[in-house]
Image 1 (cartoon, one colour):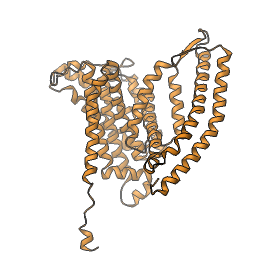
Image 2 (image 1 turned 90 degrees about the vertical axis):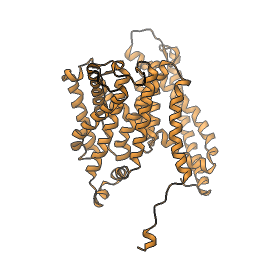
Image 3 (image 1 turned 135 degrees about the horizontal axis):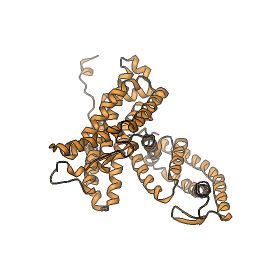
Image 4 (image 1 turned 180 degrees about the horizontal axis):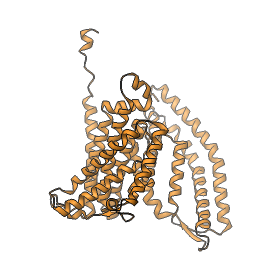
Length: 433
């Protein structure tokens, strides 16, 4: 190697790139500050707080799934333990009048998540793939069942509650009003997101990607995949604990639901639906799933069923998630060929919407006669009243479902052809796919 080659420094990011990078974070902080001014109702602030908590939790899960390739069915363990330790910390601080303000309590949850991840992770991460998934499921069931046995710590089915206003005030904030909790959650969300993004840019983050893609090659170059998986697991537990602590502060209670399979499944859904292949994917998924769960629960009694159907549809037809779908259009946008696929999208949208409407009608009528057979047949679903006993409703549902599916399949082929044409045109203009 020549001296000239040896002294060449790695290229530094351009000033415009650095400005863009910091500008994104500054803009995000400004949006978080302004949101309560635009949406000041208590319900909106609570929703924003739940979204922030879900973002931290989903990103922490993506350290395992998206970054390191570890599918976990028990991530709620570290979320829940962080929440329980935070609740106990609030009670201890209030009882002994320690000079510790509420904004520092999430550190207790993070420390709890990190500690238990260190204890349980060494064995869990010795194997990857299916073995890791099964171990995580076993650990989740063990901890969840312990929550109903160790009543002194977990509080049984009722859980453990606390009064967050009894903690030392910070800048005369009692953290009683929801807007103050929103700003607390928003601040921790921004800190956690920046920290987790920075983690992906470190050599450790790159090695996590390498372990995900080819652990044998990583071992060949001198690194231990087990150690890398273990460190990633610990970081994931740390941020999951912070999310659990914020949830406990928000609701002023921690119960066995924090540790349950539903919590683990929800974060898996949010992360995968958003897109595990992109850092912003879990953020998009957390926002989507939170709004969807809050919205659907008010519109239908079987909202979990629709939730599962959406997840199945994403797995089958959009494995890259919502973010992956959007990023697929980036080459077309750069090449100026996006307009070539929009007409086919519109053409496919109409029969697909008809098919989905028919499916929803069929589900609501079937559920009514399965779950509530003795109640009045006049029901309301998604704000629309109809008579489930009316044969016309069944006929309309069948026509929309079957007819929409047949026509939609033909239009989907048109979409595929338009997509190939637009992508080829973009490549001819020098835009890489």
